[in-house]
Length: 119
Image 1 (tube, helix red, strand yellow):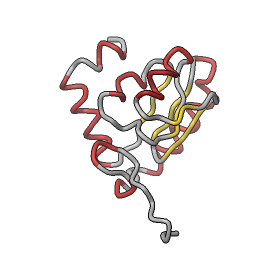
Image 2: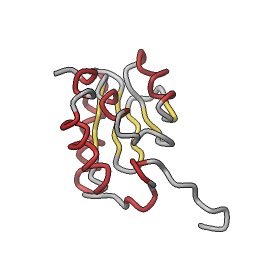
Image 3: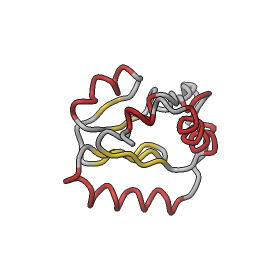
C-alpha cells in the first residue's frame, strides 16, 4: 500500500501514533512521510522527503531540508532511493538508542517551546 493510501487508514495512523506517543524511533523515506502528516508529528520537526512532498511537509509544520538524511529526535527521514545507504546507517543508530524522551513534545508529537531560561 502506498503512503498516501496508508494515511487514510485509521488503524495505520493509530499504529504510528503509538510510536510517537512512546518515543519510539520512526524512519521514513521517499513518500513515507505522507503517512506521518496525519499524526501531527511533523509540526516543528526537521525532516526531508521526496522533493514533490516539500510543500505538503511544510504545510504540516515541518522544517523541511533538502539533505540526504535528516535526524530529529528519533525521526529519521530521507529523500529518495539513492539516499538508502546513509538512511540505513542513521536509522540503525536511532533504533539502537531505543525510545526517545517524549517530554520535549506536546500532544500529537508537536515540539514544545523551550522556555528562554531553560538550558
